[in-house]
Length: 199
Image (cartoon, rainbow, N blue to C red):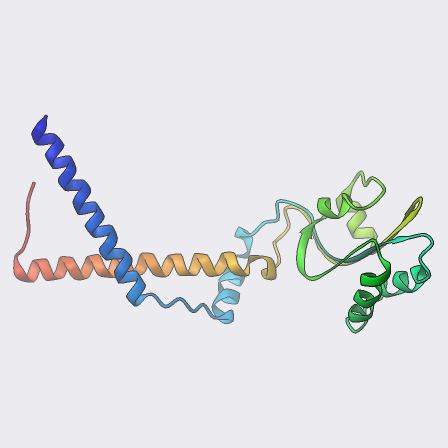
């Protein structure tokens, strides 16, 4: 039993040495720059692996008190599809809106948006396909939203949402390849030097 325990400690020590060696080898040799082209090629090749688990939207929205002197102006700017109007919308919303969001370069789930809207959507997929602008009133507030883009559950996830994930996948593949190369080099060196230990 003592012999087995000593062997266990030796194996554990060797595992730590190997792990530290691999970690340092990766640190020194891993190319951590993933180009946009690499991401796009990977996405194009494996896009079917990226399915949405929720309905998602890019949206501009504002919640405004019914007495706000600039309520109609904010509504007009929210419903505008012009990117140039985003700065004006933010200017007015900071001063006159109760809440607002300019989520035009990121994605949120449709459920997150629904938490802010004073009405219920029974079939989100049908709603998204048939509605771009939302204007809802619940005294004393108006809620305005403009859905700029959407993705439906179980459809292919947009590249912009998967970019970081794909970069991580590519880096992980590079790490595995580096470790494989390292093991092959160590093995080849051991063969050349006839440096083996059999158990």
